[in-house]
Length: 385
Image: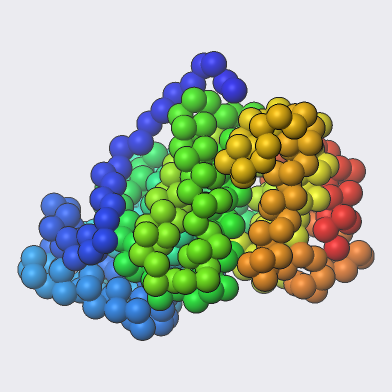
């Protein structure tokens, strides 16, 4: 754990059932014209979109809906959405949905207030000066984008998918309403829940872990371990939904502080080149990754073993093994992919994937215990087939 650290979180977080109905109250602080950024159908079908627009209407706020959000948004997708926002003269951006909707909203907020191309900010050649006010409303318990200043997007020129960071894209307000998650299908509940779990675990084992990370990550891990199967089996259980929603937000804050590790780095090209859903793409790699770096994280994994109901009298090595076994068993119980073959990855693809990670995912590799190189990444991919 780092002994020198900083902590900054400027967002107002509103948590609770029914709180989405208050979005208009907060939006009117930032303007009278709101752009709602969402997907094509889920927010409409669940009624979440109607609740947002009704609240805006009550506060006298006009709105337009941008509902062309896609999974794994690209620069081009966000540029298109930003042009839509500018044409409407949007004053406040509301991201309603899963990670892609919230990341797109962040990209729009940055793009409409800064000149140049997104790629320049993505690669760090330019720094943003400001961003439009953001309100984020997650409808899944997974990405935790409502809790940080990271917008994940893909550069189609080279297939690089990673996070754009800016201090200006912290949301002004995040509204986490567990009622919006009760309609989530089982499959989405499963893979978004495991995404949140790996956010919490990776930030905890990260070489940049610090006391605030530990505080948020450990609570997130505990909540997920105790609630993910129940939420998966019974989506109407509002208490389990609330616990998963809180865990996701806490884990999102954690990765904003300490980042993720090579597990996320190795999944991103699966999304870019094989169209993998991010949460599902993490699962086949997770166990081989943790087994590979176990000698570097045994103490950390052992330290959280009681959360998994593992006997406290076992040796540290055995505790760490049991934690990894819990992950493997849970992936199986949630019917999530256990092999990269699920996405069409073949042995011949591994060299290109490993080279991509080595070249483009240096930030995530630098946080990973063991300081993985190409040969290590290749070996983990191979074990994930």
